[in-house]
Every structure is written in structure tokens, then in C-alpha cells.
Image 1: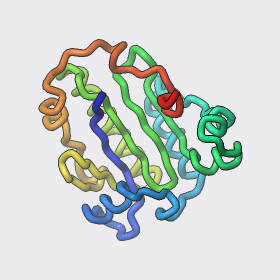
Image 2: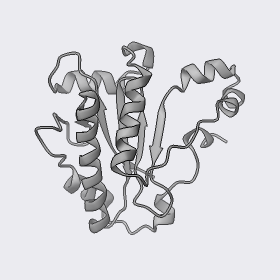
Image 3: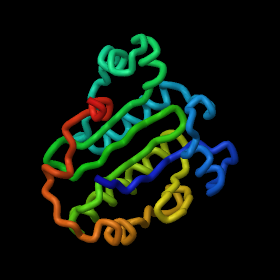
Length: 185
């Protein structure tokens, strides 16, 4: 299933810049990005959950990851040091993954127009909260738009609706029940 992605990122330049956003988002090795504090990640997660209490924060099973990737538990903790927040089954699906200096937000394609409007209103609010909490700018790779959420609103709804083709899907199809690390099993 395809998703619509947004990325909130920490800028070294101090202003929204497409080339910087692409470089940060497309970095293949997370170590290429200067790490942020775990406190910032937790602050972002707490602020998002405070805004939308329905968001869930599933615990990552580092023992399972270590076994799956044939690495030590400590290596799994280092390699998968992110916070994942998502809507529960039955809600309009949104997944938020908070890394050291980037927050990725995804919404599955296929929602009706009314559900997409609601999802995108939440995404806009999430971007503003992330900006207020951590100072991150937002990059929309579908439109190539990089912006400061405190000065502009997220405007990807029409692109989303075009890409999804108004494909009718049930909420059960849209909401995933597996944690991201279990997709390889």
C-alpha cells in the first residue's frame, strides 16, 4: 500500500531549503545526520500525544529485532533508536516516526475525501506542534514544497486525493496492526 509522506527536519541553515531537506531525508546512513537529544524526541512524542490522546506509542521489542537482524540487543537499540506513534485500528491511519533529527509522517492513500480532509488537518497540526516543540521545518516530497509550519499551512490534500484516485478502502485495510519491524517476518 502506498502512503503520502511528510518529513519534518532540523535545519542547519535556519530556514526552509529544498536541497537541504532532500539531503537530510535521503541520507542512507542515519549517522550522516548530527544526532539530536533523546529529550527532544520524547518532547515531540509527548506534545503530539497531548494534542491527540488517541495516538499510541507501541514499545519496540529490541530482543525480537536483535534476533531478526542477527545482532546484539545493544546494537538493535542503537540501530533502531526511534519513537513510533500511530493511530489505533479503527481511526484514520497516521504513522509518525521520530528519529534523531527528522520526523516522518505518513498517511495511507485511499481515504475518502472527508476522511482525507480530517487526516490532513491532523497532519497540519502535527507539523505545527513539531515546529513549536523542536523548531523543525517541513518537507513534502510529493509536491517539493519546503516550508515553516508556523508561517504556512500544509497543502497536500489535492495531491493526495489525485494520487489515491478516491480508491475506496475500508478502515481495516488502511490501519495496519503489525509493528514496522514485523513486516519482514
